[in-house]
Structures are given as C-alpha cells and as structure tokens.
Image 1: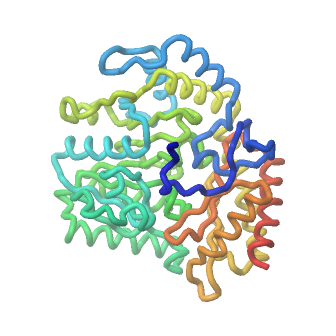
Image 2: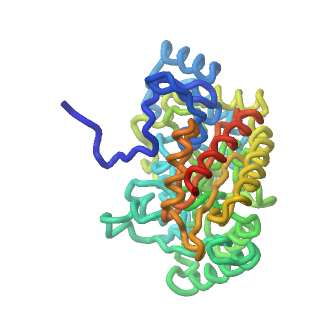
Image 3: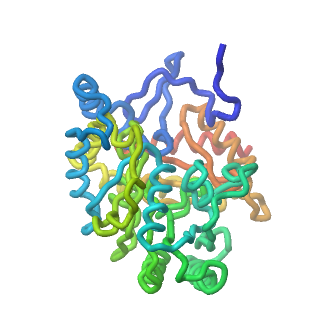
Length: 418
C-alpha cells in the first residue's frame, strides 16, 4: 500500500470532506472557519457556485487543449479579460501552472530581454521551491537546506523589515536602498543586473507589507540602470491586499513584469506572467511553453473568478474587512505582551510573537496556531522561525465572519499564553 511522502508535514490535523464559502467541514462533520484560503488560493471562497458551474460546463466541453498545439476559447477569453485588470501597457500574457513556474519564466524573460545574467532578490522573499525559484528564496532555511549549490546569478539585498531592525519605516527603507545601491556597485554590478524581483507583501517571510517608498525607490533605480522590475504577485494579486494588485499601493509604480497565480482561478492550477508585448517579444523562440499551461478548465474557472470579484465587489470587501481584521487583531495584541507586532495589508494579517527580550518566539506562535485549530479556526504560520501567525481569509469574508474569527483567535491566544 502506498502512502504520502513523510516530508509533507500538515499544518493542521483536519481531514477535510468538503468546503463552502469561508468554511471547511471535516470527515466527522465538524465545521472550521478557514482563514488560510488554501494559502491565499480560494479567493472566491470554497466552491463558489459560479466557479463550480463554469468548471462543470467546461469539463463537459473540452478538458485539455494543449495551447502550443491548438488554441481554445477559454484561454483567448481569459487573456482578453485580463486586459481589463492589468496595468496599462502590460498587455501580453504567458500561462503556466504554478507560482514557481511563473517566477522562473519571468527570470528567463528578463535575462533574454536584457542580455544580462544577474537577478537581485530581497531578504525574506519567497518565490517558490523549484530549483530556479528556490535560488531566489530566503524566507526560511527549509527551502535551501541540502539543496546547494543553488542556481547562480542571484544576489540578495536587505528588505525594509522595520520591526525586525527596530527602526521606523522610513529608516528601514533608507537603509535598504543604501545597501541596494552598494550592492549595485560591488557584488552585483548594475550593468549586469537583468531584474529586481520583489513581493508587494512578504509572504512566507513574515507578512510584512513592502513600503510604498521602497517600491518607488526600486522603480527609480531600475529605470536609471536599465533593470527590469518584476512584481511577484503570486499571493498579493487578484484583490488580496485591498487593491487588485499589491504593487498599486505604491502610486505611480508599474512593474515591467507581473507574476500571478494562487487566487487567479479559485483553486484550479493556473499561473501567468504578464508584460508589455514588446518586452515579451524579446524572449528567445521556444523559451515559453508547457504541456498543461493554460488548461481549459482552469481558464474557465479564472474567467468566473474575475466575474465574481467584479460583480460582488470583492476587492473593496478585502480592503474593508482587512481593516476590520487588522484593527481587531491589534486590539487583542494589546493584552498579550508576547505579541511584538501586528501588521497587514488587506486580507493579509500577520501576528508576530516575541520572547521578553524581543527575539522571535516560534514556540508560542505554534501553540497559538494549534489552539486556534482546536477552537475551529484554521490559520498558518510563517517567518524564518515560524514565529508569525497569518490570517488569509477568502475575499468573500463578511464582517460577522471576521468577528467570529477574532473571537476564536482570542481564545487561542489565552490558551497559548496562560
């Protein structure tokens, strides 16, 4: 009898039978409030009726039309529809299946387009587990451990994680940009750098919003040195941060390449990179393709997802309920000295646990995380030492459900800290 790999460590003990909206139900019928959303994937909630109907209809029509062999209508319609939500000038799309694949496609395109070998990523970033994507990732040792040597041509610069440094945001941004400038004069000469790649909110690295001024600084340096700016919107895209794209929190900043996945198709495997057509055309012939990319059923689900997001006002809802969630989580933290920081953007809220001397406290975070699951609230941890508990509700979450989640989180905190 076969079994799952022992390396697949479960975040919760739940064996799920079905999902509906913001809830999951286990095989015994117990209901859980799901504030993980499949790590930000089920943007329209579990099994949204319109997404289900679109997928069912497509399954009966065409399941797989390999898109470098034949072209199918869901892919063409999705591409046209994405033009309504992508920034002006970002008008060419390439589809794959996972965030890691899309990240690697963005790096390949940047190297081809510029003829330069190097990519600069930022401390704490998570860009995937495949070989190229892992080489860009420093969110935690588990991604890189035992996997060296990593892909070459990658340099790292500090990320403005103000709480970690004990500085104001302005101080952290000034430091990070100074160090980036130094890097471009030393280990990663600017003339050799193809791209900067950055998450608008650090995901696995601790749910740290990227300051708008830092993105502005990256855009200015990219323009000055002929470097491309890649926004890894795998987790932040499709309304998660309260704007459609996470980089839009920095007014006036438009990336050269956008990477999207997760919430794109409400749970179906689909990812993409988007760039100006003139830039995309600089990739080398044959450098883009794949057997399953742009799957017809996934594209149909993505079209339905876009319709639901627009018709139900889910981007605005993410902004509104995100503020409610963040404010309430901060109110709870005031009664728990072991919580050092609560931060977030839209429906991405992180609670950072620290010891009395200010060091990361992964043990208490783990207890709080487990206690939440025992009370019926599913959450995830992140951060280099697993010391941040993150909340990622679906974009359909209501005020009452936010309040219910906070009430359960309050019980979990009491259990974990007394």
